[in-house]
Image (cartoon, rainbow, N blue to C red):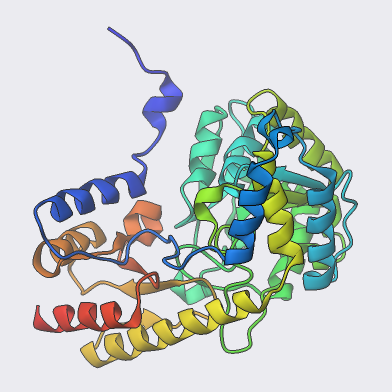
Length: 385
């Protein structure tokens, strides 16, 4: 009776919903599930941020519609944080746009610039909203293979001229989900030149910049000369402060790009709950020791998992950032079938690489979002099977 739009029909199944269904079914059967699938921090939001939310929620003034473009105080806090962290100066009035989580901004951005017949250049494997947002805008995602032999960086030279002529946006995400790969400034310099030459907008997803190990400090593309002319960068409080459910992030960079995204959003939403914005200010401007302690915690978990996988003979990439480990599946196995096997025989949830795109086939992703004892238990289960 009801006919779906072509855009909805073209959307791939959202991977994490499918994983959650399988996990819930197994848990309902009374099985002891170790969830290494979805990247959702298991630690609580810092207490001082929760207290700020509580106090702000008591004020009736914060119960009304929020400003679409965010509180000026929040925009200023984001600008100060960017300056302290990356040395990048942002105009809080025109170059910073708070978002209801960076995901919605990334998904809405293509609506501002893509028309039917246009391309967005999308890394493969990738975070699903890059493709989904492109399809919902009526355009076509063109896959850029992230291959191990190229350190999981896109090879810009291999993009056909016919595609470059129709491309309006290129998505990049480093530190990367799902591969955990990182990018250095030399890559960003090449990318900026590519974008300027081909009149393409760079959409940089920097959600994992504060989750790094062994002294490594990820860079922002906005640190590079010329980036402000062609790039918009997306960030989030989700992973940095364990605030995934709070839904607060931002876009920043080129003021024309942020202004057009703001126009899209003004027709779709009414801004972030004011109490959450005030708590976000406290997160950004308050003590940052918690962030360092979380990095130390994830590094311990990473080392535990890497040591155990190595003892099993599994091939995995040792991450310098993110809380993901990208692991090769045994030869002859598909990532989906292997993930199903781990759930069926070991009660372990992992994410099949193919769910992130064609070139994710041959890998699974494990998230460091359970304690060391559970990681050790998962490794023991893997050893037994």
